[in-house]
Length: 68
Image (cartoon, rainbow, N blue to C red; front, side, top):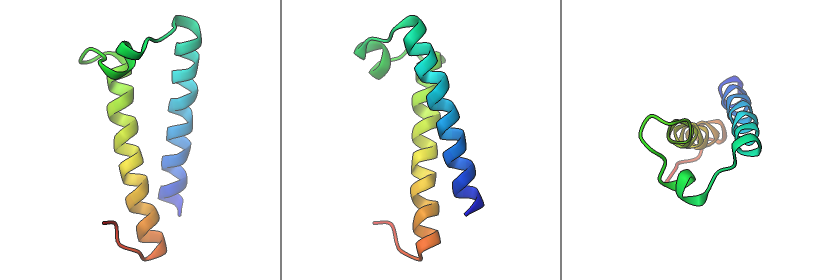
């Protein structure tokens, strides 16, 4: 349960930073989906999706189910 909570808290913190960046600078769809390598958006997208994937694995483990 702790690992799941840690992941959720990290994801929420990332979302807050992303929203602040978006409100300050604006983000186009192209910037979001085709962000240059090494940019904040690219890093955000890659790291966030890794956390989402891990969170799904942890949730399945907690419930004793199998991810298909």
